[in-house]
Image (cartoon, rainbow, N blue to C red):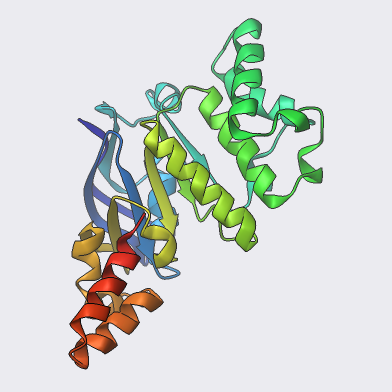
Length: 266
């Protein structure tokens, strides 16, 4: 069953340059998909179109087989949430507790439901000790966790991470990636927007955008076996695979195979 389906999507901010060109894709229930691309490739625009923050010039977006329209947007936002690069842009509450509650209030959850969800999901993401704090006082990693708690509390089954690790230090980034992996193991559908191919390798499937079009789409093994196309999309292979390809040229098959196995470990 498709959780997300995009058909013939075209988008432009100024009618002069198309940012997205004839995007067609299906994302299945429980999949972890990484959308890769160089700056300006259209990956963040695609994320915003999928959640209904941007209206395409042409094409359709379906979430759980429900067509995204002005009339259906309210119901669709119960199903899908987005965590942005800078979580400060999505904080509206005076306290962490208020912020987690905000989405549920908009969806008319009862007070009892909200209190139960705040307790459960703040504990689930490890921010239960921050509930009375102002979001601005938290670290980058803690803010991302609060944003995730607010989305999960709305009972969404699809989460988009739009460059959500790019402002984090290496430790907070590793921590967040471990948590995304845990969410995926629990059955959530994950769409991760990134320019970092090392990060993307944790996903089941990679989609590479180039100049607003889908340039590559396949499993990690399939995409990584196209090094020339990855380079053409202005992305770099992981260091381990660059070394593997160098060893392959020198006919050192054993070391090359070891580096491939290392690269694909999740």
